[in-house]
Length: 534
Image (cartoon, rainbow, N blue to C red; front, side, top):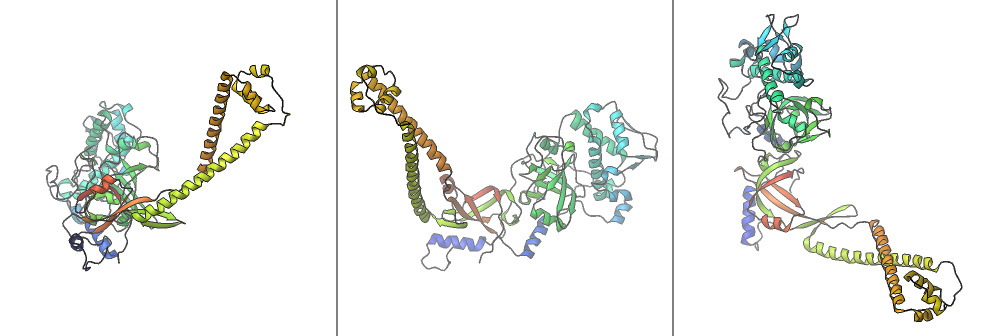
């Protein structure tokens, strides 16, 4: 764009420049400011294990949209970090502090009673007066309220792990009201019975199970909880859960960087849109999924969810809006971006010549296309003439056959000819073809003409087939791809970040719609890195 001090600028151009000078800044920031922004966006308080027992619900995506969905005793405020001595002083057992998602399946409850009866379940402790997953599984399958055939293999182990991890997180984050009374064998059995009644007996499947069984889409808005975050210099591994089942997640470069910075931690809830299930083709239960199965989503289509947001599908599956300043250059696609159009640049055409990328204006592209079309037509004509010449010579050789002496035909012999092919052969072999043609009747002349027409049609079909075959072997001259560049600005009321939006192959209707000053929502936009503007 030219300098703003040019004296011959129109009033419209001066207005655009004034607008850009006040609301449009570069999307690219220096490294320190970039990481500061990431920390501010990702460092809100989070719960250590914020699972939920709801199959679906309406999560609150930001801290200012709604109040917590339910007034619980002592839980209206955000959970805060409590020191270990204070947690222990409020009655939380020391073993609860060491419970993680990976170790929750091995957790055992102390039980001084000979039997534990909860909601029709009779749990018999082991010889060391403890209760683990084996004792809970035996109690569930032996209960008269449970049909063992409905319980899949490893279902109890999976539910036991998720429940222990969730209840331990409640005790650590809310020790004042949950300390010592939440992670108990009685509570676990009650919630296990609830899960059996809801999922297996009531056939209400949670989100991740519906996705892996190919009965629902992973692209809709989901609220998931980070169960495991494992970082190493080479890679970052994530495990996400909907509170019922868990799958591995495939983080992009931006999410890996945030995890190494400590901004992505276990227990954090994320709202994601446009996720994709990769690594396995066939539909199956999450308990039967292979190790390659994982959920892939982009950081730009991912946001922090409230600590008390319900896990699973969001009640509104449409993409949630993002602001331009929150887009990470290596964060992948953006579910939805609300921006204002500050400038629409002239249409350009993208092409490659001798391995180099070339951008042309519309006038230059019209000149190039006209020259290319003329050269293409000349090349096609030469190719068609070559095919006709080759097939014509081959056809003449076939018709000639072995040389035979010319002969004469009497009127009687000509009168016996009953097909066009016989008449054609007779004329070709005659010493005087004109005399033979003069002896033909009107009907024979029609047969001869029809035979000639069929020969011409067959010859033309052979020429066209050979022409198409040779044309397919010729290098394809692909037309240049039109693209439209648009400068957009943020709409969040703060000093905006500017970005160049590239739209490939825009239609005339879309070009007419994208006018300067219009506010638009862009869906499925992909961030292509950052470039410094001089």
